[in-house]
Image (cartoon, rainbow over all chains, first blue to last red; front, side):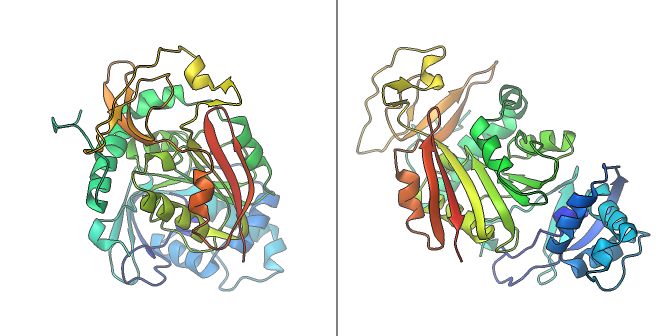
Length: 125
Length: 254
């Protein structure tokens, strides 16, 4: 699971959960896999990213990547920033671990890079 | 593969529906994942055309992505896939695709998120109309206003305007006559490569050694439109038959 995917996952499907975002991440195994850099692609993706949630994920994983506290329009044109975002969003992979609902603490296991977001019948909203 | 010896029937309750889909869809796909994947590598051209209609940097979700055959059509859009079969998702991971395991009636993503959704050959595995409506509602929920979805399902009619589909022309078999007991709503076993006798049936998967039955609800003409009419915020853009499949493109309106 890449962090771009984490940025789009929520536990809002759980009964009683309103936003369920961002999910906390606990990683037992991570990988770094190089992905071809496409400046235009990453520049177009960035406005779609929940930046605070991404920073929280970087913090949860203890990644040694410096993301400025706040996003700005100038930053979105900054090559250094775009490259860091490319790396953070697309190159880190959580292989084993879990996602945790911020409201209920419900854990969703990640196995072989696949988050398991299936619910029990009784949990469905 | 069913543990029960009595004939399977159409679901009478939500629990029945879940059990039927668990036994005759989810379990089956996990068992046949690799053989299924080896026979499902060719993308359908009109799905590719749909994916090519999005601008660079678009976010697209493939609901029921299977082995991920549409996940790498373009490298300038963000494709994410979800499926109910872990076996098929493992194949996606071997190909470095981004996927998560989820049910199509409860997709764990925010409302108004995606520019596009594809849902290819998925809804015909859901065993009640109420559940098929839930799945379509979920697709509408996750699309952003102005976003578009392409949904395709297997058609009951395998011959349209005197043109037979590939399914019934390739290795064609003669059609047996099935009689259905109306009082029990028994699910018949469909004879592969023949016209469908009933909208709800079990289709054998026999390659190369397994003998397993997949549940299908095959759709009649305009059935997708009929279900979509129950959902507000939907504008139908195009609907067509593509070689034995009903296909619909719709937009979420604000």
